[in-house]
Figure (cartoon, rainbow, N blue to C red):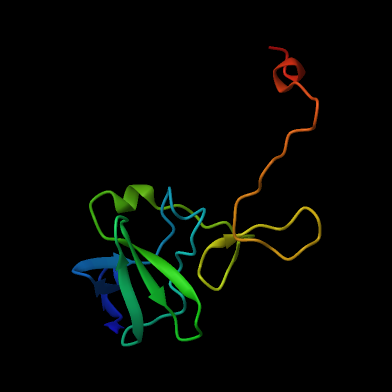
Length: 125
C-alpha cells in the first residue's frame, strides 16, 4: 500500500522508489487514464511502478485503475488536457466505440482494406 501525500505541487505517491503525480502526459494520456482518481491526502492505495515505463499504476478503492507519471524535469512541459469524451476500461485503458454495435473494446480501431482496391491508385500515386 502507498500513502497519498501532498506538497506545494499537489498530491503524489512514492512507489518503487519513484515519486508519481496525476496528470495526462503526452505519449501516454491518450491511451491511459491518468487522472487523480478522486484520491486525497491520507488515502492508501495499491501502487506499483510499471517497469520500463515512467508510470506508477494505482488500483483505486473502487477497483478501477489509473496511472500517474513519474516526476521528472520534463513533466510540466508534457502535460496535456485530457479528452473529455474518453472512456476507460476497469484497467484504465482507453476504450473505443465499436463500429458494429458490439460492446466497446480496449484496442485501437483496425481499418481493413476493401478487397480488390488499390489504395495507391485511390490516392493518386
